[in-house]
Length: 167
Image 1 (cartoon, rainbow, N blue to C red):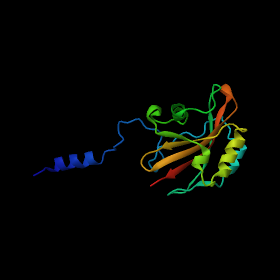
Image 2 (cartoon, rainbow, N blue to C red):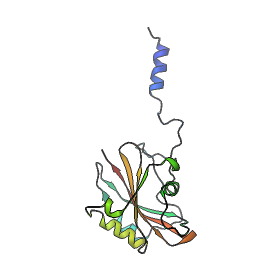
Image 3 (tube, rainbow, N blue to C red):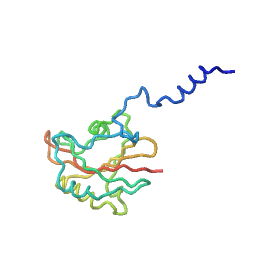
């Protein structure tokens, strides 16, 4: 027969945080990991301020779009690759981040987010627009619709992002 101490030890182990010991990004109150979408001193372009006021991404949990404005030394190459993007948003493990790059037309095949894509394109003054799908644990993913504003060291990565719950 197990003692009370054995049983308490079992309960304490069962209730430990399964993420203990792993590097993590900041966590929101709901336990999801939060990525950096804006940065102090980097202004959000007006077209993005306007479009994100009322826009929602439709999934199992309709979530609002948020503006994105981050410093990005694009070095003449335009948009970042998957690892560079993970580093920009402060992903807790950039090299192992589950990031997929999508074409905006494929991502929005039904045209529901045309206003978002148009606002991002306007903010980037016609630069290429890309969608980054970032896995955020389980059934959660974030869609980042972004472009570049400016060139070189003074450039910014701007756009909009939303959380999707895909069950």
